[in-house]
Image (tube, rainbow, N blue to C red):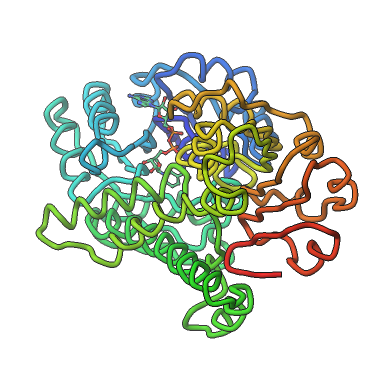
Length: 442
Ligand code: NAD
């Protein structure tokens, strides 16, 4: 099949690469010429395990191309995916300007019947809007499919190649059959391709992300109460997740959810509810709880040292900056809230992340966080030299079994704030550290 993917970011690049891997001819389009030049030279613009190898292999086999020329890509393809960003607008709604702009560009480029697939996360009713805009520019028939993406950054290639499910929203039989043909190679183990209306497909993505955000906020709130009553949230987690109705996944306490999806999708769903006169109370609470949660690490640190004023002149080591492991994505990362608090209080921060150094500096600039007292270290251990405390923010695998004895000799005072409950409080305490976890006591 001849496939175009418009928008070559996290989703577009992964989707394009994986469609090429299953034998399709794929052209990925982006308006950013620097991004396209980098991709053409064989260098991925994002970090994702396995992406570079798969991308280069399909480039060599000439099934995967990159261009800024949207018109040619559209004219040469039967199926056109839109995977541009849909960030939050000021009122919380999804900003559809890129989706609508691409719709007009696609409409102008049409040279025959095409299937247009919306892969961006978009509010209910967007498929209709896209169809109307395209129809303003062409008489050729167009079928709009709503095909939300559920990949997770950090395991995006695996998720795309073996999705739990594929959601296809369309009322057109031919479009459904084409999409099924395109996705069948990814569900050979029997996972479902689920057909529904465009509106339901659009809503499914928001429902999924709102549910996941709610699970995180739920366990974070339980962890806060554990801190107060002296219970251990990890015991509670074990106790509740063995109930199949609750399930084992996505109930890990931490410094709050971040990333490019949950915060903006929760906001957009709340806005949709408001527009339709339905206050979404559960989801609203999940968002408020997350805003509070992002402050928790900073508050624990301030409390230990005797208040925010006492943080002036202290040195903190930060392990992990990205919003989660295996990605360099810093969008809405909880580390940013902590960095702002520590740096504004006059602390020195030395940080290490295995991947996200460049993106962290860009994000700090975007969020207006001064970098004068912020230093990136070349290794996790280097951050610890004369540090007053270590704060574990992102649970990269390489932080799981550190040499605590060596760490203690490097630090000025052996204090650990474990924002992900990565380590065992008892054994860390026995090694001479003062340990703070999220909802657990040594
Ligand atoms: P991104 O910001 O990484 O990429 C978007 C790309 O679109 C950029 O490269 C940008 O230059 C390009 N672009 C913007 N306007 C364009 C235009 N007019 N023509 C061509 N290219 C254009 O975004 P992303 O993280 O890949 O997300 C894309 C969509 O997928 C969003 O709606 C997001 O909510 C959704 N989504 C993201 C994830 C994720 O984990 N990142 C997961 C599932 C769904």
